[in-house]
Image (tube, rainbow, N blue to C red; front, side, top):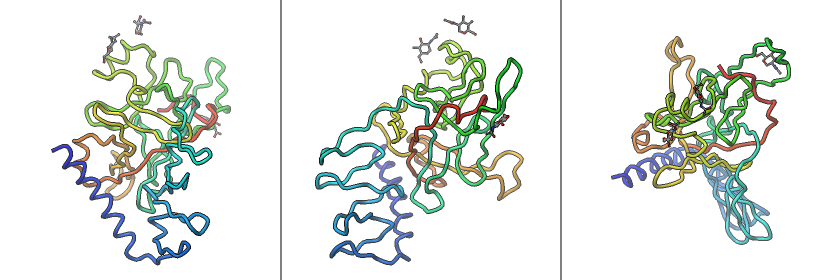
Length: 263
Ligand SMILES: *[C@@H]1O[C@H](CO)[C@@H](O)[C@H](O)[C@H]1NC(C)=O
Ligand SMILES: *[C@@H]1O[C@H](CO)[C@@H](O)[C@H](O)[C@H]1NC(C)=O
Ligand SMILES: *[C@@H]1O[C@H](CO)[C@@H](O)[C@H](O)[C@H]1NC(C)=O
């Protein structure tokens, strides 16, 4: 059953793909014809597939995803795990979902034109609010790059698989367990590569893709104020038909690109 569902989701992904290809002109890569939405051409001779709008690259006769591997002298090796603060982008198959910044607001991480990026700062206690750039920045240890007393943590909500973050919490596991029952710190469920994939690990697999699912924000008139929240592909979430599949990719940034607090 689980396997059937996985196939259903992959079929959905390729149907988006086929519809985007129909209206497209073919191009030449050496002797070969290809659709530029489907493949990238290197040196007018090597074709590598594009996955979720992210081109793979040639290495030693094969192709590799630079969000997961590096290529040295024709040998493909795993990227290092992230140790630096990072921002995230979401890349789905459709053009409108390419390279979208992931934004924190209201304890959700979301993408899309109407996703808001929220920040707050209190100058009391001598905080230099002007020293923050207020982007959405995460740390590889499971925290948000905020400086509010206590810490803010990003996590995958155990009940619905949504990627979220907490309000300021004293960072010890009894506080965490009372807030997010049943799960240890989120960093244990996600593998982050430096300048690479943000990959969710569940009991049976590591998934290299996520789902961006449409929500209408409370108070938004119908058809406005819509953003796409990010969901882990749990078996339950994979039943949904209103989501864009895509990859989350980390990019190393300065910690001070973050905010004092993410409200
Ligand atoms: C970031 O937000 C704080 C208030 O939360 C503000 O004082 C500061 O100037 C902002 N920084 C930038 C670069 O806009
Ligand atoms: C964890 O935080 C709680 C609530 O703030 C506090 O009562 C407890 O002493 C802390 N535990 C440790 C080991 O610091
Ligand atoms: C928090 O929950 C985890 C299991 O999810 C458990 O291993 C850990 O001991 C708990 N910590 C506390 C302080 O209750």
